[in-house]
Image (cartoon, rainbow, N blue to C red; front, side, top):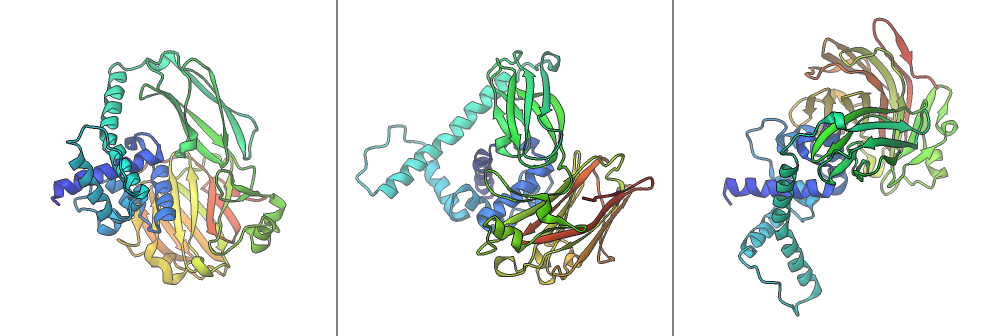
Amino acid sequence: MTKTGEEQDLKKCLMLIESQLSWGDSGHWSNYDFEKLSDILHEKTGVRLSITTLKRIWGKLKYDSAPTLTTLNALAKFAGFSDWRHFSQQERMVANSYVHTAPLPVSTEPATKKGKLRYLWLLSLVPLLLAGYVLLSNKASDSTLDPKLFSFRPDKIVTEGVPNSVVFHYDAKAAKTNSVFIAQTWDVSRKKLISKDKHEHSSIYYHPGYFNTKLIADNQIVKTQDLWITSGGWLCLAEEEPVPVYFKKEECVSNGIVEVNERVLNKYNLSLHPKAPRVRIFNQRDMGDLMSDNFVFETSVRSNFNQGTNACQPMQVLIQCKNDIIIIPLAAKPCIGDLSLAFCGTYVTSKEADLSNFGANLTEWTKLRVETISKRADIYVNDKKAYTLHFPNEATGIVGVQYRFNGTGAVKDTWFGNKRNVIRMNE
């Protein structure tokens, strides 16, 4: 296949993935979107593509080299094919079938083969449907809408904590078509088609966070409003679909330690085998004037589950900001070959940098410290400098911290500070 042909196949594969995700125009995807895509792709395919790699593939970062076969295979598998060769072969068959415009004949072949033919026929319609969508979108956006003609306001039902319902009050009668959406976060369940003739829409948020919600009309963002859902102190949960399993605070917070252990998991019938549940610990609150470009953060973490599929004990510590994210990885020492670090616009993976100092004996308390001064970040693991970087993004307010474990995990001695204040994340 020619290079041009492979580039076209890659574009079609990315279109299929975007269609499955339903996250809207990939040109508007944020750091959160690529972080989430990396997690979902890893869960579905077993391959971890870094945020940097995904942003390069989607054209967010300049990259002259072609994607590796491992990357292409992972994308094709995510799109529903066995590997990249399978996807490319199907694309050739679809292209060859374009010359046939008559309906498919009735077949006496086995049902599985008929299913494949039907799939190929439907797949051949995708470019036409997408072209039609683009034409309609362009037509709708020919004349720019006046944001002053729209209104948009989200109201939380309870002051803090999750689950938490939000009522969005809006006026979108000035939209020229019925293409009106409320975008709430990267999650597809948070982007909803709404009626331009109505004025309220409600939804449930299951995770704390700082969300830049948007009212979108005729493919144009006409209003934005920040929505902050705090955690109400320490919050422990296990990821399940569609609703997480929430643990009571008294079950996971005691004597200054926040911990989800096997006893807690057993109480909720969550097994560590064959695959450990994804445990999350949050603390989101008002952090005053704490900013991403000048702060100190310190915490200690531990994970004593290192069996089965969790032999590498991968974990992440996320410092959550109003308009940005910091993701610091930790893992067992033998497993530092598959780590990704994200820091306010800087993305580093172990494929292209030495992240070996993020390996530790995580069955024991491991101390993590972050110091930033004027967009320079120094990260320490057990008082040893693990990495230094400079980040490009503008300073933004810090709103809290999140920990990600598989199975069991514990946290203690967590605090933030700057020259004026120290914030201890107490119970």
